[in-house]
Image 1: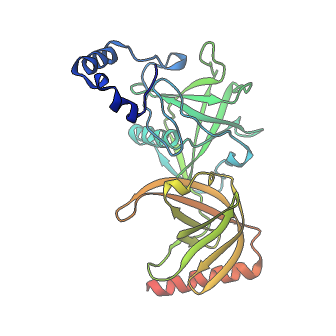
Image 2 (image 1 turned 180 degrees about the vertical axis):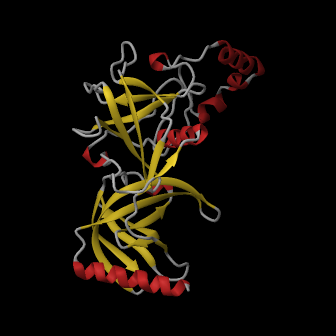
Image 3 (image 1 turned 30 degrees about the vertical axis):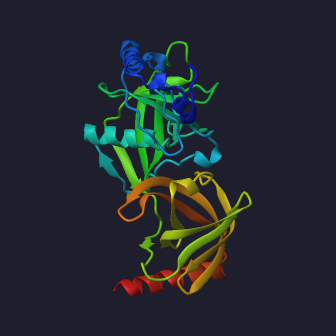
Length: 301
């Protein structure tokens, strides 16, 4: 099919005629939708940041790497449990929408395997994982770990995993009956005050950026920006020589992106929150960050 730009359509008015429009509409109705790959006949797909969603096709996702590996929840921690089927479906849909990597540990340990949720059945409690080419999901018990907003999301399943016929990289698995959620923030975060200068300035690919800080903690910061400024700020990205202005204090540090999510602001419209952790922060700079946080806390009293 050949698509004509709008200015050419203006010179071909017959394309806008009632007869042509009616025929085009009827053709769309008569054309059956393409079946989903692997025999999954009904599943939900919604648009995620940076993804191209096409009926019957998987969104384009960036290649998975070592930075996407998530450690299992420690045994000594105290996560809370999710057992409600609707809440579990909502959490899995959230992971799919945002393209979050899923780390799989066979027998709860060993070499981690990375995957993504490729499909969610709209009626049955089944999701389909997409593994990297050549990777096989070992039989037996497996632990599945991912990131859910600011927490770790984990569940255990055991089975003789059977890939979709003809597509070894697609593996259907059932919904878990129980999931664990553990807040992964090691330190309390404080939202930046409305009054004052709280920004992060850095250079990426030769382009200077200046973003407003969303929150600050002893272990890292959160930035916000418009979606057009977010490409390249994916999980695992290292930012060097970042200048943080924390009110009256200035900190020069390296950051690693650990969270990226979209949200809608009443005043600013659609925004992207970028969560970063400090990398090799010097004791002097750590003290400066702590003093800035203390000052922010006092200002809230």
